[in-house]
Amino acid sequence: MKADYYFKDTPEGRAFYPWGVLGSGRIVSTEIEATLKRFINIWMVVAFPVAIVAVLYLDSYGPAFVFGALGASLAVFMAVYIVVIERLCTGCPRATERLTHSEFNRVQGRSYSWWKLAFLIITSFLFVCGGLFIVAKTLAHPGLDTAIGALCALFFGFGLYRFIAMARARRD
Image (cartoon, rainbow, N blue to C red; front, side, top):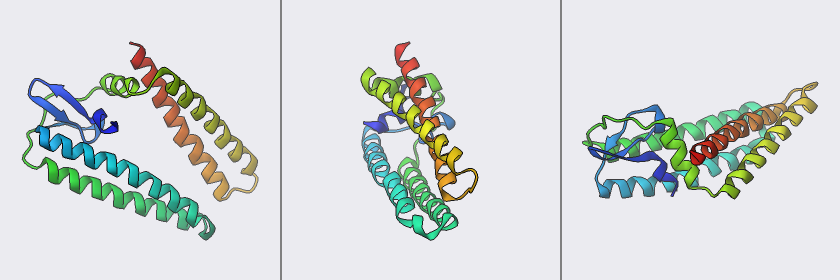
């Protein structure tokens, strides 16, 4: 379950880190933990595909409209995340321990087999190369294709970094 990445056992109890390694955690009960996991898994399944489909569907309206729609949809989904998480964690005490990068990477890395991590690393690398190729081919006449190529390279480049970090943490 992907939501497990955001939880950690601490001396105070089970801690939930809504912003991963970037923020502090909250000590939550078993019932709240189950509700949070269910919400996060549903949110991940809905938010990202809707944003991607919106970009693909709105491509014919031009780059400004596409990026505006993408920004608006991401803002709405982040607002929903913040409101729901804050509502569910109201009254939960703050955790004294933070979630470290190595703990986060280790939990994520162990949720994938070696074969799946290798596949994700290779695939991400190929998509980075593809994005850079698109940028190089369209640089003479920049437009939406150039922006999409750059975003592809950036997105999958970050994914490549994360998958390599997971593989390294899993090995330790």
